[in-house]
Image (cartoon, rainbow, N blue to C red):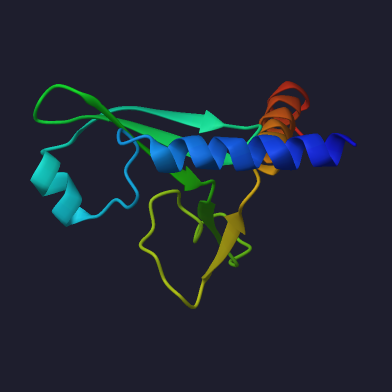
Length: 126
């Protein structure tokens, strides 16, 4: 029952976005130049697993663009600390891309990394 309600809500939201002229259907350089868009804010929509971009156009009106949540980060496969500086150039042979497409997964990953760091700093070990 809850799944059916969530699906109906998603359909209603998609219909609202499609019919509202303030929402951009696509975002590319031509659209940005034509409307003279300036980024105003970016919000995550965790319940919908999307990101909302808010712009101001040349007429000082708000414009919106909704995109699916995608977070990409790279992890080095080198094991020693000396070769693993934070500021290294991307190298396809040593950096492995990870893609997270769910906001909750990213939130849990950030919590785990921060928790491990805090425990390491307090005790000096993992």
